Length: 479
View 1 (cartoon, one colour):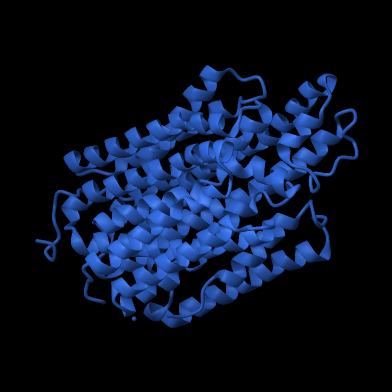
View 2 (cartoon, one colour):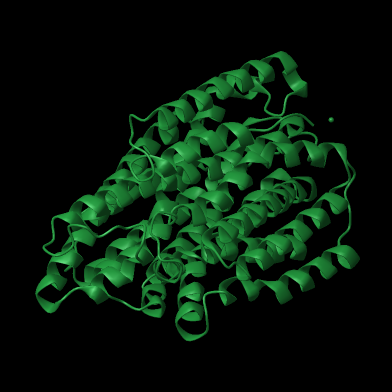
């Protein structure tokens, strides 16, 4: 289990460590248009290869697949640190996401095969708590490193620990017995994310390029679904899993809640730095309330589920609480008080932490053991594809809104967001323009908070429709 937790910490920190470095990256590369791709490229490969690794772990021994995934992740992190252009950084993030897909799929399977069902809530709650804290701590660590060292060390810092983790896995990891691979979703997701990234910035929404990409995504997705239906149980994603209401409800709850949480985690540091003029380190410190809230929520849910044997109430409670917290966050502006920033974000962290750890427990309670490996891969996919799409949509909303709002500021009518960084807009503004520029940035981010609120509100359907089962009754195989 030590290898599971070590890998969880490293990959989770890497997932969002770039968040507080985004404004600095836009200044360094002199462009805002790639801001969403630093996260989307990672999640694109992370979710596109989840099913491939899920099948690989059922076909091959866990250890070699796990080690290969670790090597790929280290290569991706190294490329990110050495990036000389935004395109190279994006490529490195994609490779790191590929490695993370294999590592996280392996983590989930190791716990399932090593721990009996009635004890899994505690271990998975601990893992989810560690992951949640690490994901939320990423921006804090990234902010400190970016301000006091250099943004490249946001990636280089992972290398010695990643190497040590690799050695630990090779020499100390005990392999498990393997328990049957086809095409993935990469082409479909690339078409979708390119359309979202280019729309309104590189090309007009009604251009043939954007329309063609959306049509290509729809066509390829239909082909994928038909192909999976024909393959039956040999499919990368057996569609029979989706015939169960509770499976669909649980996966949708996970996807939407994780999407809301990740959009907040990725864009809040940018909001703190661009709309409030906080430094990278200060924006990282302002993520501490979310970290504390998420930690308390995850621990409370894990302990509560283990004691009561019930997971349903935590799903419903997290959904209602997240809706309330996100509703308060929609009031954020460039002059919101520090007390409100801390209180509202801490509330959102507590809500997120208390709900995100429930999903694997619910699936394991609902499904037979033979379906759990692919169900865990599907859950990881939904946990990643949702945020990837949500962050891509948020990028479109933010960059398009920023162009419009800055054009309304006197002296900024002809400024291009593709040729300047976020903090440079404020630095280049005259004293008489500064308030208007800060307000323009804050207004550009306001629709993002409503996107988060919409995602949070829709989690209520998944929480309500998921079947509630007691975990106190062990299944015969486990007993």
